Image 1 (spheres, rainbow, N blue to C red):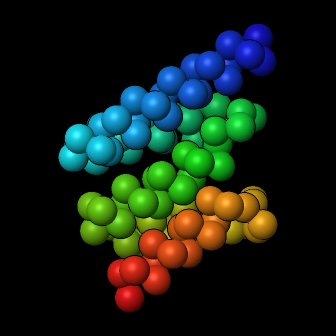
Image 2: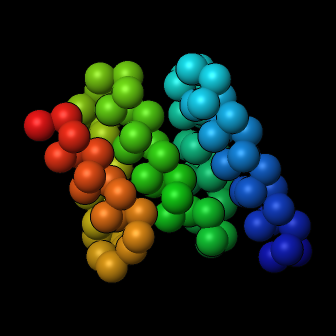
Length: 93
């Protein structure tokens, strides 16, 4: 069951990344939010928080981006994804 859940989360992330690369941030956001909502116990949860932060910044919704960034910072304080998210906020300053 764990392997199947990880596979499902991985597929959601892959499709979300595809949409993001193709310039469709709303569809990407839905995929990332699915991982956050339904696959919290998978290795992809951390990246989903980062990608959601990134997508909200692309959409110009800074309040939601900050909220997801703070969740990432609280849950994963020494994460590689947290460092990348911090760089996103530096880039917009």
